[in-house]
Length: 321
Image (cartoon, rainbow, N blue to C red; front, side, top):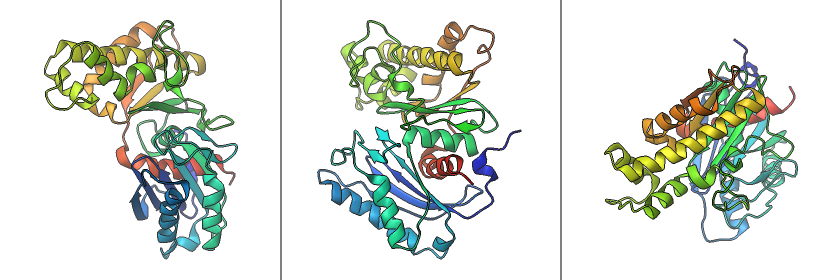
């Protein structure tokens, strides 16, 4: 079985920082995937860019107090997107204070101020999740894989020939904005009929409500999933529609670059068979050519640890040794 570069690196730990709309986390991730010095802060809301950066600075400062800090060899940053890895900037949809914020340069400066001038990589959260699942998760041992996050939005990343493939700006594999409905509704990205506009948690709940679904309590996609498991026809149709959109995009990606597995994580994927059954059923109608007919769709394995492990794995896979 081919060994991913991240798993093969017998060296010091990677400083990993995971930036999301809810939390900012950090850890020292070791070559075997174990984590030490794990820390987190809530992401500041309704504030300015420097206040958000101050939370990141606190994370770096706490990590620097670890006795293993001086053995760190690189830094990986995973962030909610959009990201521009070529410029080291982020504009997370759910962190309004950061627009084209130079997070990579700012973190590099914080590292240097604490005696750690480390090579650093910035990756979007979908790419980081992909690196994590390929290293230690459900895509381990697969040379060509699509990994996706289905949550408030839909993102993803690609591993091709055992190499992480983020593209020039770090956005390759962003499956959420493949159009699967030619005459579909407008998407927030400016396109029409995008996967995200049909299969995200927000889209599932919005469509179900528009079709007359009446939530018992929770009006989110999780509530739609509960109703679907109870046999509600509108809720079942909402997940069937989402599963079909995801199946079409997964098959298109596999046909284009010959991936043999699709790993699906994120909050909506937590609904289990309610989502995976329609994906797999519809996939049989889209992945029809001989070289994609055996394409597998499986749940992600790493859950909440994927962000930090992925930030470290992305840095190890993308930086030269």
